[in-house]
Image 1 (cartoon, rainbow, N blue to C red):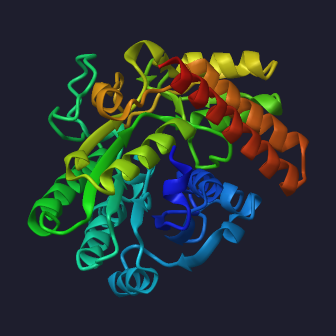
Image 2 (image 1 turned 135 degrees about the horizontal axis):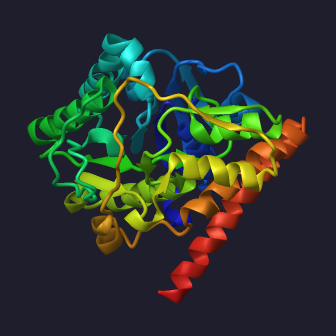
Length: 360
C-alpha cells in the first residue's frame, strides 16, 4: 500500500457500521485517510463497530438509509470525497428470501442513489462498489468464474447484486466517461474474520457454539466456498482505488478471491473450527429447502496480472485468524484489548504482504 497516497485523502465509506466496513475503517485510518461514514445503525446488538468504538476514527458519522437520496446527496456535497467505497447492502441470501423487496431496494436502488448523487461531484476520483461472488449465473459446472462470465442469480440476493453490476456499468458509460471519476465493481469470495456477528454466518456460529460446547447445526454441508479473511479483499479494494485515482483503464469489474484449490466444504470448515477450538460439540445437519449454490469459485487472474494481488493466506490460515479473534473476544471483556488484538492481526497481515513483495 502507498501510505503517502492516503494521507489526508477524503474517503466516504457507505456501510461503515457493518463487518467489512468496520475492518476497512480500521485499515484506512491506519493509512492516514480522513474517513466519513454513511450507514444505518448496526443491525446486530453485538457488532464490531461499537465494540471497537470506531466512531472515533471518523471525521463524520452519518446514520441514515442509502435509499434517502436527498440525504446522501447532501453528504457528498458536504464532504466532497476523493474516494468512495460503497459497502452498504443487504448481504444475506437467507434474508433475501424473507424480505425480497427490501433486498432489491437497498442493493439496486441504493446503489443507483449513490451513483446519481455522485455524478456531479468534481472532487471524486475513485469509486469502488462491492457486490459479491454470487453475481454469476451458476450452472454448477465447477468452473471458476471470470469477470466476463454471465451474470445471473437463482436467489433474490444474487439477482439484486447482478442487477447492481448492470446498473453500475450503465451509469459509468452514461455519465462518468468524460469526468475524472473512475468506477469499479469488486466481487469477493466468502469473507471470514473477527467481529462478523451477522445471523447465519458459519464461522461466527462455529465460534459461538464450539466455545460454549453447544451443538452446531449446518444446512449445506457439502457446499464449497472460496473462504478468505476479510483483510485480503479489503487490501485489494484499497490498491484498486489507488490505481483508479489516475487511470480509467482500471474501471470495470474485478474478482478478489482465492484459487479453487483453497475452497473448502462447509462441513470441513465446521470440523476445522471444532478441532481448532478444542470443542466436544456435536455437528448436526438440517438441510434447508431454500436454494443456495453448491459450487462457487472465482478466477482472479486479472487482479494478479494488473494489481499483483492474490490471497496470501490459505483457507485454514484465514479461518485460524478468525477463530483466534472470537476466542480472544470471549476471554477478554476489555474493548481496548479487543481493539489492540484486531490491530495486531492487521499488522500480522501487513507483514505477510511485505514479505510477499520482497519475494517478487
